[in-house]
Image (cartoon, rainbow, N blue to C red; front, side, top):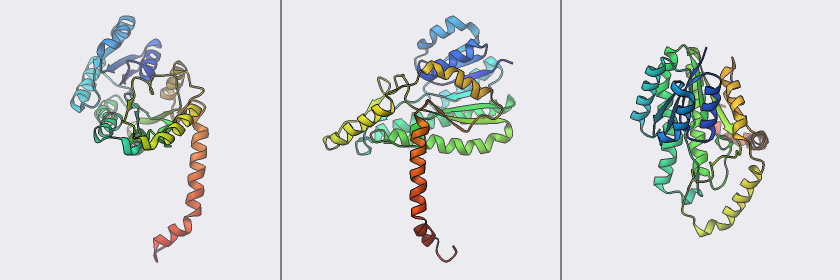
Amino acid sequence: MARTWFITGTSRGFGREWAEAALDRGDRVAATARDVSSLDDLAAKYGDRVLPLALDVTDRAAGLAALERAYEHFGRLDVVVNNAGYGQFGMIEEISEQEARAQFETNVFGALWITQGALPYLRDSGGGNIIQVSSIGGISAFANIGIYNASKWALEGFSQALAQEVAAFGIKVTLVEPGGYDTDWGGSSASHATALPVYQAVRAQAAEARKGRTSNPGDPAATRSAILKIVDADNPPLRVFFGTAPIGIATADYESRLAEWRAWQPVSVEAQGANG
């Protein structure tokens, strides 16, 4: 049976790739973008199997209305993909209040509103998949993108809890955690804080480290078959890396955490008090 997808941020990047992957195999897609004209080519190629919708995910009411329209148009929802998001660059001290709030409004609250709004439709459809686009920066953290890391860590936290809450309804949650890909994530779609001169050396070091992490970027088109395998799986993962680099970053990071926690366990026990 053909599935019906609702995907945010389909103008380019992963959202576009996954929309085309679904449509190419005969599925139906409610495709959203801030500029709906960027979806004209999808509508021309795939006809009535694609429903283009203008949406700014930070507008909760608009998100709920888009979900309702998609459900009424197609009669069901099976796969919901929270892909809309962007990267905010800047040291923590450099990030303005407006930049911090805007990052969370899109990357956290945008995904939260769509997730909340989609759940009744997924239940009515007998279950389905929620795909949250996170990042290797959602389980680790790097200098000069700390507020981006914070937004993705928040997404990871509520999604892990969500997976436990909705499993009984046949709804499966997967956090996709890509490494570096040949997309525009760090280019025109990114936001950059006003730099403080005191961080010049730290910034240069962070840029060099990022080059190392992204020196062999993944091919966004290769994620098409990967995302289809996830939504077709009987038991999809809660978390899955996209790309070859993240497993090494995660392994080093988590081994370091475990070693530090164990080394400080005597202090942890001391902090328990007499009841320990």
